[in-house]
Image 1 (cartoon, rainbow, N blue to C red):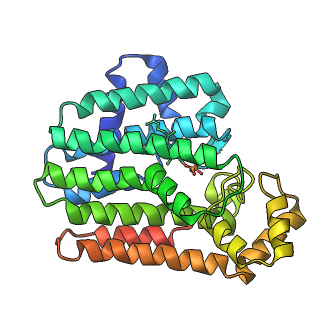
Image 2: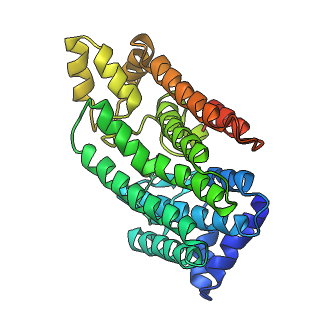
Image 3: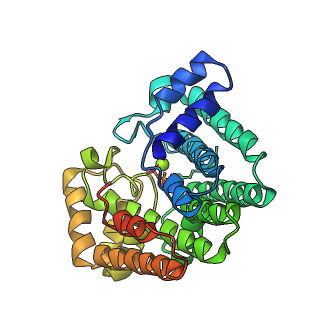
Length: 298
Ligand code: FPP
Ligand code: MG
């Protein structure tokens, strides 16, 4: 089924009838297709399930094209990003094309589905804006972080699960709760992997969030646990390209302060809330998605 989603995405892009756009699109790495997997599991029987999955993945791909421009990111999923290869202007316009072609197709789906997805796109744009503005200075406000990651990441995952349920006429609330908690856990796991994994495994620079000005959950927990002297040391490293000894200091304090284990426990708690929400729905495979997502290495 996932191959069908890939094929539908290519067909939607090809319907623009422009060889340059098709060739640029071939250079966009496909990723985990988490949102598509959820839609296919929840709405598997519906003839528009593949179409909805393709639309959401096109929108997600568009958001990452823009995000890599915003973050000045030179690699994505182990290969040079589109902005690194063809420049920011091309990456932005390719993002706009994927996004608007996705929206064109979305208009043909039931209005409840279209509203769920389009509302989430507004939220994820808001989340990206919040992420950019938060990165201007160090903060240790967990509620602000929670709200930003809900908007930036969880909103589209929540909307994918909700829209899939709406498509097949199932009560959507448990699926939305599942998607929201899965999405929050997904972003926290991402934030943890930035610290625990190497660049090769991640397919993007490791230990990069804090250098980019992103005060993620492990850093919030670490700051809370440090003494005054270490707090000052951590603040001095905010937004800095780290030397090997500074990177080693962060790694050590992440472990000894309990920040990493606390973050992992929080992600697992959210994963459990996701599982609890869909307990009664009888949709197979959604539990495996949560477990794989928590246990992933990149
Ligand atoms: C990745 O965050 C970014 C997102 C999940 C959302 C980006 C959203 C937008 C740019 C706005 C919406 C735009 C369109 C065209 C729909 P990250 O930088 O923390 O993760 P990363 O390490 O994978 O880059
Ligand atoms: Mg980014």
